[in-house]
Amino acid sequence: MEHKPVFLLIEDNLIDQLVITQLLKKVLDVTETEVNVANNGLEALQWLSAHQDLHQLIILLDIQMPVMNGFEFLNAYDKLGLEFKKAIQIYVLSSTLDQDDIKKINENNYVTGFLNKPLPAEELKKTIHRLNT
Image 1: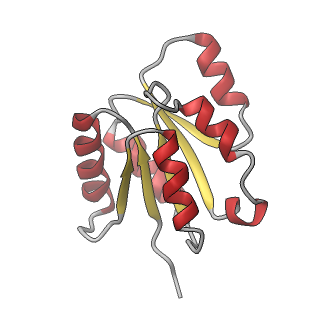
Image 2 (image 1 turned 45 degrees about the horizontal axis):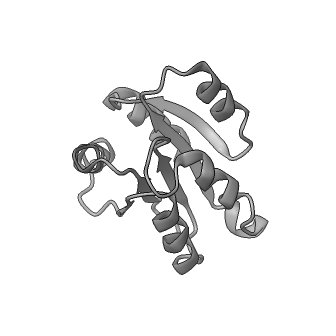
């Protein structure tokens, strides 16, 4: 049985939440795409702890957020169980131009890829297609 990926968008900006959610549904061409939203890294960790039975999870992670930013989330994520993390891919979504941030993102073992904001539909479509093949 094929499992559809579930998305967890970790983003504090309400407009970005709406735009990215709609873009995901349009790119995947299905209205039933499950997109969950966390406003910061702490909310995301709480969501993850309640959903440890997922078969395929794609996290879209913003870096600059209040309460717990993306880098703090990645540090806390490191402490989660290996078996659980096998079903998860993390893509950082950011408009940062800070070379130190970009270097930290690219060097993180848990980050599958880096996507620039505003999120280009074609780039997202290619990324999602690669995940499903």
